[in-house]
Length: 305
Length: 278
Image (cartoon, rainbow over all chains, first blue to last red; front, top):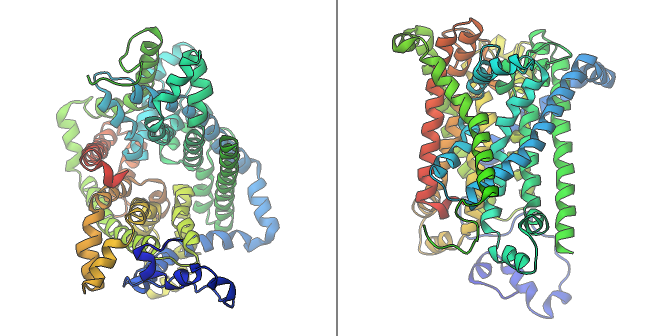
């Protein structure tokens, strides 16, 4: 390691060890828990960070992890395996999964159009993509419920066709389409912008049609970003409350989402039951994260060959 | 239009035109239509009815509470973001990635769970509930609970903007200032803060929008006492559930306006300082 100037200041031990021949002769020293640095303010900043994260994140999570077990492990299993809870979990995570799949397709299309085409109003369209990030969920919720309700612009038309969206499980799916879209678009956009155009041109020079070039060259390059966008959209959708609650119908076992089960349990002062469902939701989300990470690793292996 | 190395920059040909129509149509349907619905419903009975919503004392109380909650939550999360980024990005220590994971964890929580955890701690049957009751302090169904719920939902937003940027900027400038005799605070104020100010502003903007619009976490801890513990989003819900649709959408217009202003400011910021943010 050629020691740059900072290393010689902040990591003298590393520089010493890196000198040829010296490291072998040294007795193994335990690595200190922090690298020495000439910068001040470490203890104060880290202390505040740990205190704040401990009180705001760790302590509440400890309560979430501990409270479900008040009636023993069976109590937890019982609370989660109730048909009503299972149905709600299935709806929340199932609708989020479906919506995330659709959002991968539509998000890719929108990122593509925004990145590759020039048309009037492009900037407005680009800014509009972020609206679900900034629009309060309750506002989106009442708007969607009205829009798809029996007398709404879209709901009235659908009713004539015999299709009911509002107050059904389909409503949950429709609401999550808006919630997840920006995650996919914003994950794909930077990668698409950086994608070397010469790759596409090379593929086309070698005789690939535009469709072939897309599936063989562009899509593989975008795959990791698409997976990331999918994961974010799914995670957000599975826990979503405000955008969904007004359009869902909230009929137990049919159109009731998992967060509403938590709210209901809390209203009955069933803290252990509410915490059980909350813990199950967090567990499922983290499980999905792990699965997505595994997919990312597999993708990067294949890409690296 | 500038020359480009891409063959299909301009919209020409059948397939690109179809893709364009499909993409914009989808955006209009999924994002544009709900926004238009808010405005159409809010003004459906005319300007007078729209404005009457904001003469209600409950609406004014909800606006005041929303501003108060954001005024507490956003600066605290900004201070946390700066401290976390300073320690994580400028120093090497064991447990760094664990701390990063912990900071990201609230993003995986359902907003309702972010409210629930505070009830588990401070509710009537919470760990500290009875003790607090004895001391005469109300957290749940009161303003402190609303603030805590909001803080938990928004805590990663500013930190996540600052940590990657400050890590990328390294410590060279700070070390130079230290060598020249500047103290810790001076280095932070004169060197670090100016370097991250746009990213900080960007994070504060997003954090503020989320804090003012938070619904799930706040609805669990608020207790829905009108005029006292209803924030603006909760007030929207209350009006909607009372079938006062014009009122609900009028109040929602205020929140939608906040969202649009946030987006415009964000776009301007991103275009002004693209390097600092991306």
